[in-house]
Image (cartoon, rainbow, N blue to C red; front, side, top):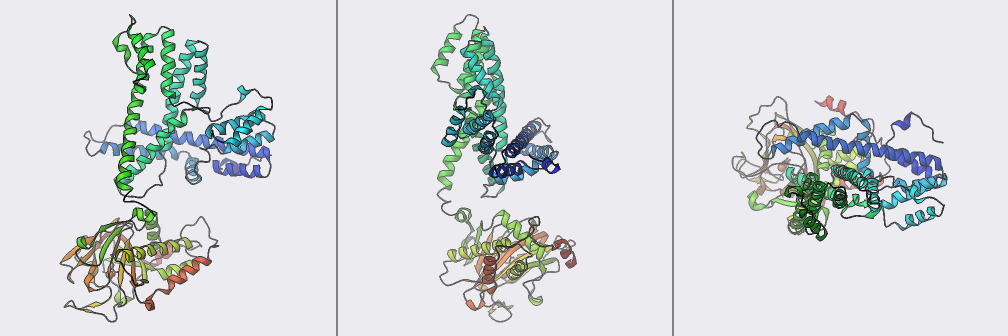
Length: 628
Ligand SMILES: O=C(O)CCC(=O)C(=O)O
Ligand SMILES: [Fe+3]
């Protein structure tokens, strides 16, 4: 027996599902039934709530009074999106289980949508001698997976147990299914009033079910590859739209019987039943509605001609019903959009975005010509939003002022804080279990990628070693003035000391072994901080300027041909990974190889999963306070 204790109350549907599976595996059949029934109940409640929040909020936003009566740039659309968001957050917030389920649901995918619980349930019911429920579970599963032979033979097996087929139900059938079935039966029995009642009800319920199914599609999004504002909107929209278009197909299955024309067929039944009960106007409306879906349907056109000849029928009887008009307008428009998307994106993008995932995202944003110099490049797409966020977080948690620069060579201006963390220190933190290995892995992976692309783009044949890797944030001090003439990083070359007459001396204290430089930017939520190529030491002749953003890489050869600097960071914090490469193995960063070894040997780190980034009890906030 299942003990119902307090803990059960807060269990999510997936947790209950897992307990159900466990009970099943241990042959605890009664427990299995209880857990899966509870899991299904929870999930249904959750789904209903999410759907109804989305629908209610859409409706509310649509009828809200605009903040300003004139729309340009689709501001009204966005205003409503904002209102809808507020509403959804509020709606979902008063149910703490929603959020919990939401997260679980994103990860476990469609266990419930695919009716997986019934795969177990039918066996557990059978074992507890509940044959009707066992058969119904098998049937429910079969409706969602009509081609599953094993389940089909299971169902047949249950039928051998002397049960009445009428008792078998599809547990997941929506209300319209049985209404429609009854309506169709009433038609066979020529019970026209019953046809009208059931079909009208079924029609309303069907449209509602489709709205709910569509609302279900408006969920989280993980297909992002182009994070710009508008492209990400249209990308998410398109994924949603494809999902919504599937609703009609899913809902067209009446207990496994596929009806491509389920919605319009309601009007077919209705026109006949209304005619038989003498309601000619309603019959004509049903005819016109049906023709919205199938304008060339011969049978219905015959009906139309027949009704037109009836003495009492007036021309304005043939107005299609409002819900049919609305439905078809949306349907046609959505189809056109999807066709357009398929056509355009297949031809224009597929050719550009082939092969590997990385190749897909990567593109050259500025070439040598645009940057006005040789051995220069700006590329985008070298880090994902997630990677940028994580790396920035690491920089901020663990940064040490000046780490990576000894005092003398520190490029600080008085107006900015300069904090960073080297790859070596990241390794150290990982080694001492203060940082999860996956973050070190990310650091290594992202930087290795830049090395690969630099080699490829500059066609470098010689070996290219990492010499120094530094994750660094430049932060405007709170009381620094808005107008600044100083630079965040004065104009310099990376591998020599530039003298006043602009000659370049390859000598100490310069990092003379550096051959290529790369800066991978991680964010853009700050003011100022542009990277500049300049032809003079004062930064008066700026050749080109690069605005940092997540995943953007500026790379160049490290000599005097590429004088560069950073403009003042006026507000906020600008984070980037600086990477310097050398052809000389003597200057290869040994810690990188150590890091790889540490990662290989540390697959069994046991860290507290509730703490992100920091594994042990390392109080990041206090540590930070000590320094500032
Ligand atoms: O952060 C940047 O954009 C450039 C920094 C730089 O030039 C350097 O650290 O040598
Ligand atoms: Fe530099």
